[in-house]
Length: 131
Image (cartoon, rainbow, N blue to C red; front, side, top):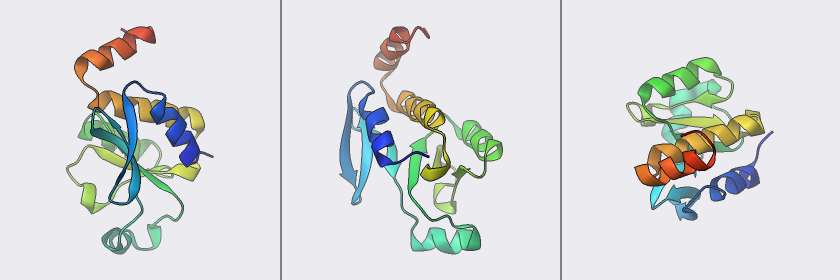
């Protein structure tokens, strides 16, 4: 089970990442581009999800593209979900209490790569031996 301290530790361990509030919630950014954020459900989300609306902490993360979003949603609907608010937007919502820590780490790193400048992303991948 993952929590906000795990998100914070992972996100702030990535190059040039900062944490700052966005709409009253925590968000993590690389060079001022958000890649992960705390995303409580709003009234419209609750109406749209109905009985399927999860409780507990929810993390929003960027994904590379809509195909990646659909793949995550199909792969593990107990962890990943979306709302109409995010239709057409390359991001998924994550039931933080249901994601494995190693999967969370990979997800946040991938979200960071989506938003990081190309040179910074390339340098990061090179240091990990993934160039």
